[in-house]
Length: 94
Image (cartoon, rainbow, N blue to C red; front, side, top):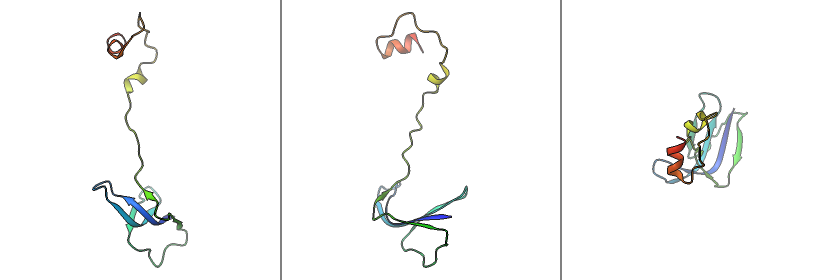
């Protein structure tokens, strides 16, 4: 199965240009995304077609930032006095 996003605006992350066209998204672990200038005359019968009316499509915005040390700190003893600023947090806790 595939999804055809027709009449889309795609933000190209390499040069930050906006490209108008159609996007074919193929399912599966080896799925692919292709930008198309024209809709193919024959598309598979199980392809879902969604008209985006030129809405903007981008890659997902994912924040991979994580402080693993805070996850591993469970069960650490509390400091003798409550830290009052970031420097004291680093000195008394970490």
